[in-house]
Image (cartoon, rainbow, N blue to C red; front, top):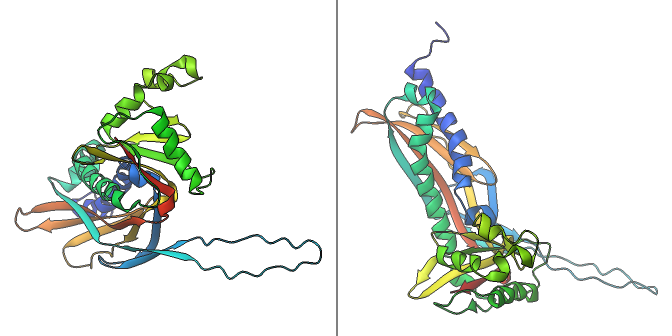
Length: 300
């Protein structure tokens, strides 16, 4: 029959099905990756390629009252060069392609560890950019609990660096720092402000001093110093590009998908060592600093 359900046509469908599950799941497991500037283009690229990420120029206004003339400006785009130096993959064995296609729960069970592993690597790479946030002085003291005044200083520093208030401010902190914030009485008691009691009820800190707080297990600690970050979206950038499709007839099938400014490829291939099918989820990306003045370190 023309529409017979076989392992052969199931194998053709699996990469597309896996990609439709994997990319949203990967995005959901990102913390930093969901907050920073994401630069994506559908053009194909290879590991080692350099991407030029444009930065908006600064312009000045001109008063033309009383017979003045317009002042023609020749804006020059800034540029941040980001190398696509990471081609991250996670591969796992597929016990039965037909069974996996027919059982979405089984597919998600197999896929989840691969997605989390890639998300954690992206998270670590972005958080490892902390030494490059040098424009603003760090706030906070090593091995000292965070306080309201420290958070206030961090937000004020970004304002003084001319980061527009219209740009959202985020803080990604360690689990310990997040716990300290939840125990600041003024931030956790309902009587202080409507809705502030959420730290007591849900454990979510939310927005404090116009900064939205998140926690990550990948925040970098060096000795007794934890390098939490406070930043605007354009402080850091995550650059992804599409990987090429696998050449037909080489024993593999691939499918590429993009979602939310992020690209991912899924490859289904035959493993001669195990005489079985395997799935590979891989991404090509690079990270870098875009606007140094839009970020700083929050130490504790």
